[in-house]
Every structure is written in structure tokens, then in C-alpha cells.
Length: 208
Length: 337
Image (cartoon, rainbow over all chains, first blue to last red; front, side, top):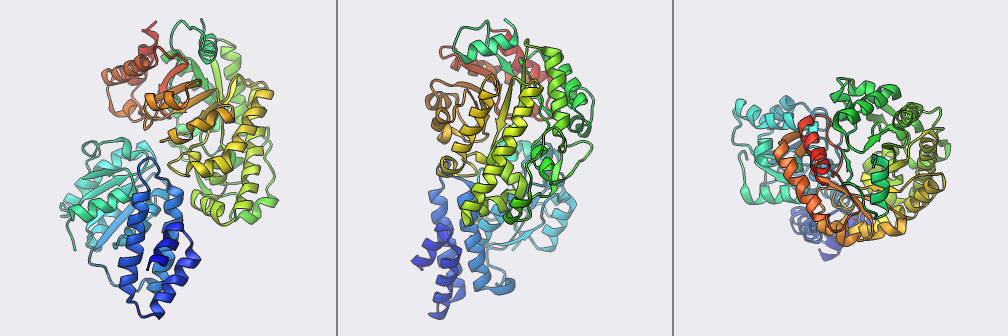
């Protein structure tokens, strides 16, 4: 498993996929490759990415390798819904920047969550409806522009209005992380995708 | 002292009558003048009028011939969505793949996209303020242009998977920026600010910056100086302190520091460079004048002995900011001799 973990952290997707294939052929259970390979690799990457050293490029490259291994281990999204549950993510209406959201998706998948991605430029109503339909454990919104903030403030109330008051709202992204959770009316404002994963791991949440 | 004299003295470490204050007012100038952002970023004469009105209203030390971060990529062939009341965004990128670079001509700033309109704005603003106020143009840095030509994810993966090809794209972007900046200088800006958010250590590690971006920024700035630029102003947002020690090698005269970097850290990393920053941009929307006054006062105190400082925001003052907060920042500098 160490060889797989090393390849993932280095972002070497070819070597990572071939290591995963070797483990499968050796009889290692597919879910073990996820929990003891992918999840461990992302945890190590997180500890490497302190606040001073955090950068999107290294996370992107490792995340891409993680997603390729996941697709190889569970082709066509055939992985059963993991016990950690489902998280719905989006970049809200008016913001077309989605790199931060895409990185969050990779980190959450690697951390063992099922992720439903509502994409960019997403209306709050679609985010809430998706959270309801997918029995979401949490919703995450990412934003790069400050003009998005009034919409972010609506998410919590819209969830409550839909009878989903227990679902935590997680915010992140360059613009949103300038604000406080109280100001945004969310449960937490995260500095990085890892913070979001840690919040979910530690605080739990509603839904499955 | 007029604004230009004040900034020139500050840059050279000479005494000035007060600390210069530059509000990074771009789209907010449109909002303050009751003009749609769409008109502002599409019409150079409208942009110039709004900038002149904002200068008159707020009384800070610079105006900006600056539209948005899509001007370069649109001129190169990207298709934008131009909403009436927001900044434009890229709908389809000029480079669907890195292989298409060979067929992509460097745009002529006098003809391509909205570049000519930006030159109109530069010309009008310089005619209006002459050498009383600093007229600032803007080009994106090569790495940021590359991400705007291909999309951020595709560009960064290209850098990892095809580094030689990515260098070609950066060289193209550098040439594009050089031509655009030179045209802005000829149109009348005192200097073209180089805005390079994709080069932030939040996006790429310092080693990547040193290898890919540093030599190109150095060449870009050297070319601007040869063409008559007053000073080299580099603006990399976010937690940029790890790359600050590289700035002297690039030839940076003014370094923007954003709110995640403390004044002490910026001073320690760049002891001899003029710094501008770093009030949190969102504070201009969410805080009140008393809060801005307090934050500005702390910054002025921190730079009182050092000098070589321009009071500013860490990045763009958001369009929806409260005018009273911008007034408070300007008052903090003007009121302290």
C-alpha cells in the first residue's frame, strides 16, 4: 500500500493506477484500497500542506491521481454509498469559477464521502433540492467573488424552509473566507478543502 | 506636493508631505457614477469618466485604466459572456488544447477585442490629470494569462504534464503582455501594473514560480522600464510572502501585499521595496468607517519609521463597497502629515 500512497502524493497517476491494479490482483479488497490507500494519502498530503505551504497545484495533481485510482477500482461509479454519507457541493449563481469546488470534490471523495456536484453558477433552489433528494449530510459552497455573499447568506434559511434545518452549511473560497461564519450565516468558513473534510469528520451532521 | 510627486518621492525613499493612498477602485468607479459594469468595461471613454469622477470624489493618489481579467484572453480569441452588471467571464477559451498555440497570433493592442478601448481610457485619463496624478494601466502576468487562455485546471495540468509546451504558452503570454503594456505606456499610463493572481503561492508552489514565472516577469518589467514606465508594480494576491524575497530579482519597485500577509512579514521579506496594502477588501463592504480608520491607522503606524509605503487595500475594493469606507481610508492618510 505504501507504493500506492507514495505515487498518489507525488501525483503520478500512471504509477498509482498500476499499483492499485497490482493490489487488486494480489487479492486486496477494493474498499481497503480506498480507506488504507487513498484516504491515507490525502491525510499525508494534508499534513504536508500547512497553511504556509498550501497550494492548489499539488492538491490538484494528487487529487487527479486519486480520482483515476477510484475510477479504476470502482469503474463507472460502482462504489456503494460510503458510510460517511453524501455531501452536496456547488459554486452559486453568478460565480463561474469552480476550481476550488473541484478540488473540494477530490478531497472529499478521497476522504470517503460520496459527492454530488451541482456545478457552477448554481441557483440556491437547485442546491437545496439536491440536498433534499440526496439526503445530504452537508452542503458546501465555494465562492471567488464577494458579490456572491448575499446569496450564500440565503442557503441556511432556504434549507430550513425546506425542512432541512439540520444540514450544516460549509463555505470556502477566496472571497468567502474573508468573512466570518456569522456574517455568512453558515456553520463554518474553511481555509482549505481539508478543513471542510475535517469539519465533516469531526462534527458529523444530519442526513445519513 | 501633487500625487505623482508624492508617489515618486515615496518610491525613492525621500520625504513626502504625507503617505500616498491608492484605493484599488476599478468596477466600484462605475457603481459610484451610476454606470453599469458592462458599459464601464466595454467603453474606454465611460471608464475614464468614471475613474475621473471617483478621483474627484475620493481624492486619492492614482487612477486606473483597468477593465477586468478577461481583456487579454478575449483579444487572443476567447469568447466572453458580457453581463450588463458584472465583470465578463470566459465562455470558451482561446486554446481548447495546448496544441493550438501555434495557430494563435499575438493580438495587436490597437485592434484586438477591448484593448483599444482600454488605450482610449488611458489616453483620456492622462490628458485629464497630466503629471498631477499617477495613471496606472494593467496587464496580467504571463501565468495568469496562460490560465485565462486555457482555463485554470487545464493550464496547470498542462504545466505538469507538458512542461515544455507550457513554457511555450508562457512565452506567448509574455509577448502578449509586453505588447499590451507598451501600448498602454504609449497611450499615457505612467506605469502598467502587473496583476498576476495565478502566480500566488496559494495556487502554485514557490519553486514553480521561480522556475516558470520569475524569468518572464523579470523580462516583462525590464521591457516596460525601457519603454518609459515609471516603476515596476507587481500585484500578486493572497499569501504571497514566500515569494516576496524573489521580487528584487524581478526588478519590482512596488509590491502589493494582500490581507493574509502581515505588515511585519512584508517589511521583513522586502526591506528596501515600496509596499502597498493591505486592508481586507471585504472590509470595504462589511465594515464601517470607524473600523477602516482603525485598520488604516495601524498600518500607518507600522510604516511610520520605515517609509516607502502606500496605504491601500490588499486587492480590489469590491464594486459594492460603501463609499464611506473608501473615504475613511483616504482620510486616514490625508489627515496624518
